[in-house]
Image (tube, rainbow, N blue to C red; front, side, top):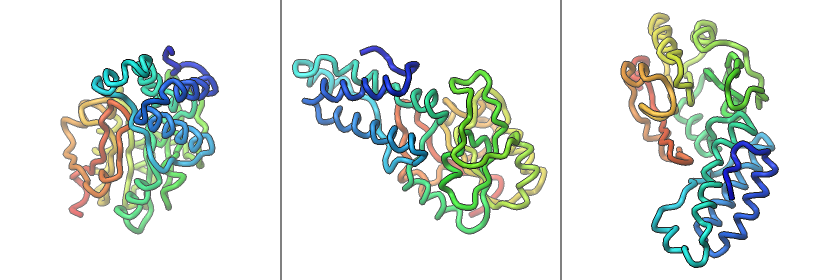
Length: 249
């Protein structure tokens, strides 16, 4: 049961179905497989899932089921490909649930919102009054063909801030790339403009998202109201932060 991350989605879902049979004696594995299948079905219809799978098995679980499911470790490897499948098949580096989007909408309150580096804009589709922006230059990415869920203005993050900051009281930057310091440039430009509002960042601190300069130079704080229903999918421990410069709320 080799890794399915680089094969067509249909092959991955077929492998999940076979894994469901293989792991039928392991309730925890069946639950993960069911949740991954449900998430894929939702995303294929441009819908956010109601819950996210938390993929991966502990060594203890694998040893516990060594006799009745000797392939459980391979099933775990298959499930661990879920995020990469989301990237290659749907151009989504991160998934939100509808419950989390409702939390975000409530936390931000009235007013317009701006999403930077929105990618395929799955969040902007469901977050009211949100302008989605992305330069849509995905050259060199695992998925080079954007298929936005809602209209996306082809703007670089700093250009988007310059155009829309006066019109919004909240800006969302979720899963910003870690290869360049555009996130720092965004913060610097907002400070120069004297912008006041809520700058929300979703990412893994000193990890898979955002630049090293961002985490070292920009003050952020965890937002309890936005982490209650935010759930990492796998080994990447992303969380929800607010940048401290721009709002005392």
